[in-house]
Image 1 (cartoon, rainbow, N blue to C red):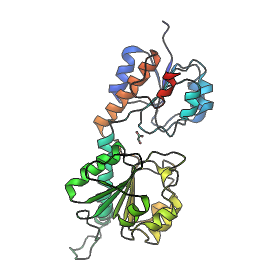
Image 2: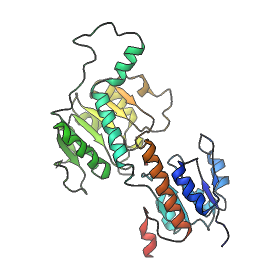
Image 3: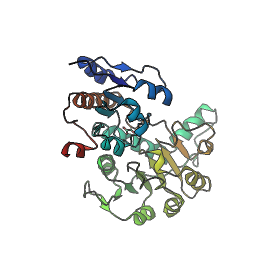
Image 4: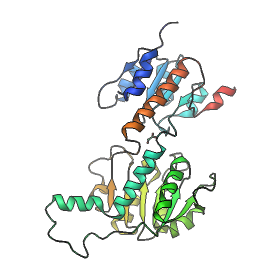
Length: 323
Ligand code: GLV
């Protein structure tokens, strides 16, 4: 068999790269920055397998630029909103993702953000570095209690459920909104309006789809308590950032903590960066060493299976196999 051509769009953790290299000789994009669109269109030409990240837009144009021999698209991510999955399905190309291995890391990040926003950790850190810490003051940087509060989880899939599991240890009441989810971890299913009206913390865990785009808009934010905190570790596009800016600026909600923005990276002139009550980190939900190694490993397994003509262990469009 002639060696298949493979393009890997970044230097992925060694656990995955080494696995691919045990079988094939991939072409790896080794710059820190992702390939530009033009470079990507050029480098995918003639490939049999593509291993990409969430930074690459994988659409019909790109699949056609690769050519009809393209057998598999494997993304080192659980979210696949950067991939036109329908276009891949129409071409009979399986698309792989990396579910499960990043659930705990992402739920931990949601908690880190939630507590940091509630207790104003980043503002406090900045206060110290700016030399403003003169004394212990009874009114200094007062935040919100998590214990005894109500946490509302929007989207109760793997990560939403892992957040609920963690919340149990804090004696909080957990509500969730997800018409397709089962009851778990003592969480109570409610409609979205009830969740927004009753929650002190609202954590978003839905995938980005046409239905969830700007789910968090002015009307969503207006239903939240003025003391409430929004946490988003899902996708930036789920939040209408203009509406969020207005709500934070006018103290319609207390604070927001975002791991994801739209676009990424967030431009330095984004008004959100002017706000003390908006904490933003650069999409670090799955950024633990072990998690990223496991994601790279799963992505490599999907790539290899696809190249061998086998079913991908984690496939987002399995319907291609029942044709
Ligand atoms: C990260 O956001 C992922 O989708 O894996």
